Length: 203
Image (cartoon, rainbow, N blue to C red; front, side, top):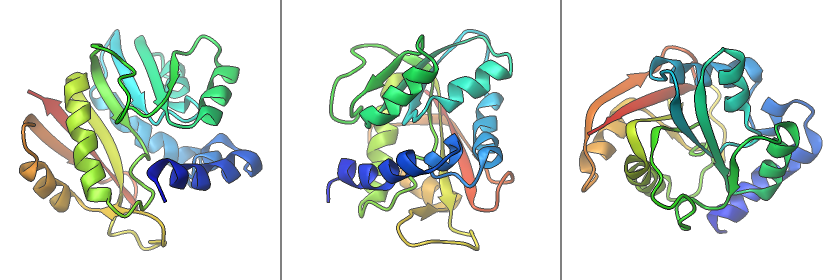
């Protein structure tokens, strides 16, 4: 099964049946979702341009807006159903539907921060390769930072169908990547037992 088909198979039933937006996106609850968003506050600055890859329903935009940040937001998601719901909620939102890893959807645009929350969680069969390919793409799109999260392999509730990692393995994967270098690599794994985030400062 192709990546997009697996993503649709996972999310569409949730969009149709779950009541809360965080549940629609596969998160435990809104608090857990926002704890992941909170990591971005370590690097965001006034008028930062943010690219939200796998933006879903635009919850990152809502979160940053409610926290009083002044920022420029662009969201992108592979599922048109997500984009439609996000724009229904926030008609002014710049949200793009498509596959950022295949299509040239952004032209020559670059962003201060490229952020991805949850896009690596589903087991696709080639997740290590997908992660490395994605980070190479993100590095090309970013002026300053790449920030993303992964499910932690120390989780006591590991479930089939999900991709789990740990900071040491991610550090090894980053060291093996060709043509991509980062000035600083920061791992944050003290906010949830089943999750950790990585902040990459772009050279």
